[in-house]
Amino acid sequence: MSLDLALLPDGGVSWMDASGDHSDIVLSTRIRLARNVEGYAFTGRARDGERLRVLTQVRDAAREVESLSHSVLLRVDELPPTDRLLLHERHLVSRELAGLDAQHPVRSGAAVFLGPDVGVMVNEEDHLRLQALRSGFGLPAAFAAVRQLDRELGSKVPYAFHDEFGYLTACPTNVGTGMRASVLIHLPGLVLTKEMSKVLASLQQMGLTYRGLYGEGSDVVGNFFQISNQTTLGKTEDELLDDLVRVVKTVIAREEDARRLLLRDAGYIIEDKVWRAYGTLRYARSLTFDEAMNYLSGVRLAVGLKLISGLSVYTLNKLLIFSQLAHLAHAEGRALTESESNLARARYVRQTLANEAATHD
Image (cartoon, rainbow, N blue to C red; front, side):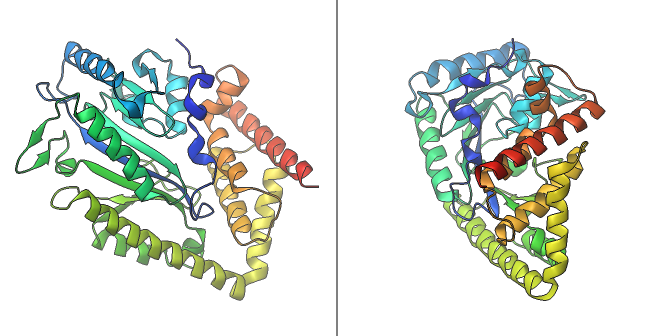
């Protein structure tokens, strides 16, 4: 079974359209709720038959859930590795659900419901991960959508819940609300002004954590950081969200200050740096993933500082995702070696930027 991207609502990439608040700095907002179905062992301990019964129970319930009425169900365990990676590159499934690590192959019963506004991963670390992904900085809207889904699905499927501890989850850090709220944010100003370490230290003091472009286990590349709550027990969802909103607003303000400082004190150095990045992307014949991410970071900064005009944040978001390995292989219609993917990446970036320049000439 191969993946037909046309079946996905909005291709699963409406979050890239740069329509949300502060979308030049905040790429996306995600909220996930971890839930387990009562009466079954947690996914990691469950037998194949149990995981399949969980999937059947959720699939039957989903037919009566308004939030999932326009969703598509994909059996992740039946997809080839490249398609599973492609879903992960689009931020639609986690690395664990996609079974991308050799020590954690894809589980039987692994599946995902993808709707226009919300989705549900089935048989990830927990039986269910309800999620909403939004463009830009939009925590309240994402939470409203996922809370509605939680109410609707929870009325059809019995969740594992403890009166004292709250929602029961496979990992103790998720017990309680089961909520993980995160923003994917671009912070080149703070990195270049050497303020980033202070910001990250203050995040951890406030019970927040940071990761790379793809969350847990991923490296920070291209100055993209994923900021999220660390624990879920002892606070309500609203309190956790308020904390994150307050901190992210502060981080955005500090990033904007850092960018103004760079322009004032090192304007010509920054201009030279970002135009070199743009020139490399326009004309390079081979680009590694890390090179592309770092140059895109520079160009994204230039667009935010209005040093480069006629280049949309949406196009930059597209380049960030569509220049990755599985997307390049999908576009070429075959598996690519590393050197082939570096050539294909450079070609895709060149063509996209040339087309954008032509439309603004």
